[in-house]
Length: 271
Image (tube, rainbow, N blue to C red; front, side, top):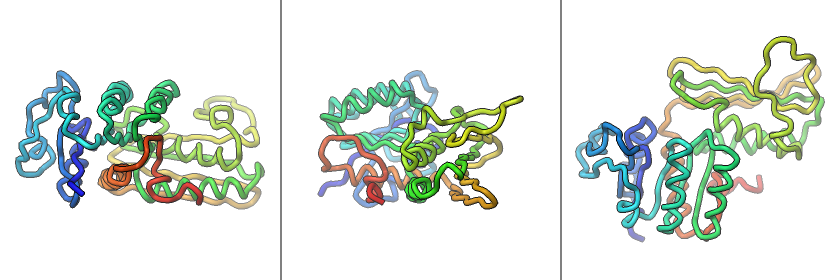
């Protein structure tokens, strides 16, 4: 099979540059385009040089439509507005769309799912193998333990992260809610301040920390009577997300149109 031609959206950002490096290191993958926000001062720059590699001749552009005509997929770790704009073009072109963007609203998610009758979309709040295994474990534990065990999701990221809680924290909270067969939107507690009263049984709490250069630390705590279970994942380098995104894209190539998650990519759906 020919190399998979991939576009990196947000190519000038930290994650975009990591994706470009990963594509360069991955047999069977080739960089077909580097997308950046219109008006960015990085437009016209060589994507290889920006990623710390030799020149590759793929210049950053703000126009997805022309570059997508010669691509098989797009790796999208940007911002919600950009991702939603990219969704329509990726669907029109019939290329794989791997979405790692966080901070998406329920209406954004509805737009993404609306194209999956004719497009292949892989979306996850976290592309890491370890995090997706953690989510599967969280669901299993939540299924096994009743409301005597309170669930709290703790996350920490670098000071520059703009959304909170993280997409991964929501992913883990949703796994816990699925295990308990409840709706996360109805049972989540995202902030506590002042005289809050006692904790409601069955709530799923979130706590957010920001500081330094932490790539991503997540812990799910099951706090029961006289004992506590903690399931944790520590990210040491964002390259784990880039490698996961590449794995997702290459797995998705040739799949039927539809909506997929990293659980599908990694065979964890029935775990």
